Image (tube, rainbow, N blue to C red; front, top):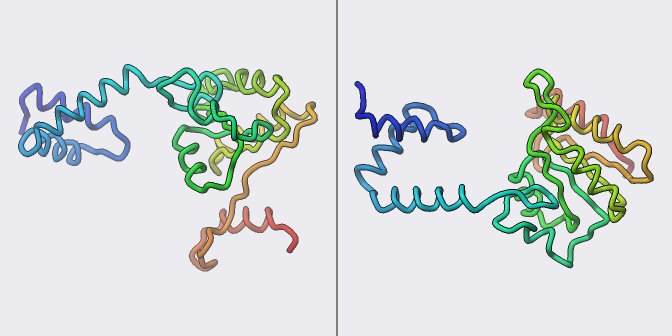
Length: 198
């Protein structure tokens, strides 16, 4: 069955969201048009406003409505500790732990030569400029534990080799509350390699 052009346009637009396939997009479109037109109008207005007014923080590159985000503007953050992440969602994840009081730098991705993503595409030069300002004493690399995330972490560490900075990588391993028999081999290998003294 084919939809009218406007309905098809809406379904196609909804499919750009992660994890939304054709059927889910159709359900969302029909729900908004059949049952909740006010929510559809609110959603479209909020999306348009966010797309217009949200950009990157000039210091950390996370999403922000202002030139300098709330975290970078805060006087209570420890500016000597800089955590390097792949995405703004990673900032949210770390902030929810309430265990890091430093500042952030968001790469906006990871190195992937096969996809044509190089150092300039993920803001490595901006990161190095920020570090060169002299406030940072430790760089915590918190890229994802993937091949690309590890390659990005190694590249950044290599760039910082000649500095006096402490460069660390977040630990990877067995989740708290996890049972070894259910943990995959790669995770166990990382956990064993990253073991520490008790």
